[in-house]
Image 1 (cartoon, one colour):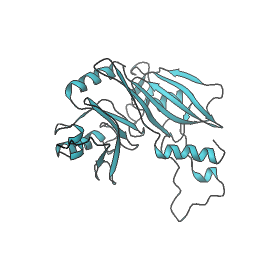
Image 2 (tube, one colour):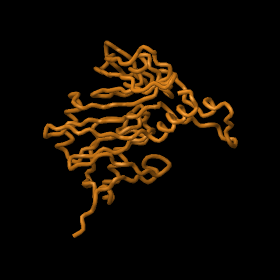
Image 3 (cartoon, rainbow, N blue to C red):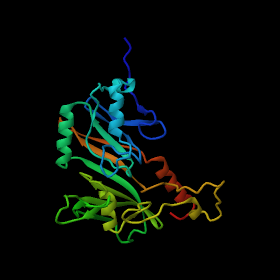
Image 4 (cartoon, rainbow, N blue to C red):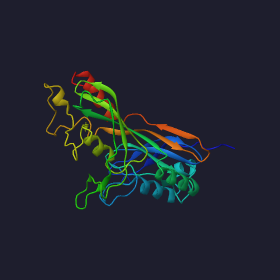
Length: 274
């Protein structure tokens, strides 16, 4: 009898995650759960600040209800899977899903008890030269009227982010942010408070994206289309996730840098402005 292999990717036809179909890689899979890529521009869970943004959990479980073959081979029935934490639209990364209710409860409790570890890599421009590492524990609250977070010692919720410089490339540098629980906009706002302006982060640092024409002055865009940035939006991604398991062990899941992030770094290195 032939045994069906678990899939390495999950397909999402349009319009489940936008106007184009997607095939998202699975970075880790076990009988307890799995971790799948979460592209920029998509949320893991719904958020009333962003009602029009595609939601990965909804798209995944819609397909589980239809008994999609890939999901059946992954071990999901029509009840689908439960996402353990939010990963906001601007942050490319991973989504962790539990395959059963017991694992979902264990992971949800562990995440709420700060037993996970998440590492985000991001590109900074003009970081303070003397700064190699720092920590920010400013409490964050949602703004009452605007779709942004603010520092509030009265109503803010507990947050903590540790920052470490990984590489320096001239006026640019690559940093790692480590947290056990990530709230909405936490990395962007904590980085800004520490003097770290993330490339392409408009909401707090007001930092522009990088265009090829700004690196190579002789470059002339083709046609009449406006030039697009090398990396659209904040240049950051969730690179590593450490997950506690019910047996006491821990699993560390890594994902490669997204394509546009890698292209941005290579372009900066090639044209001598990184």
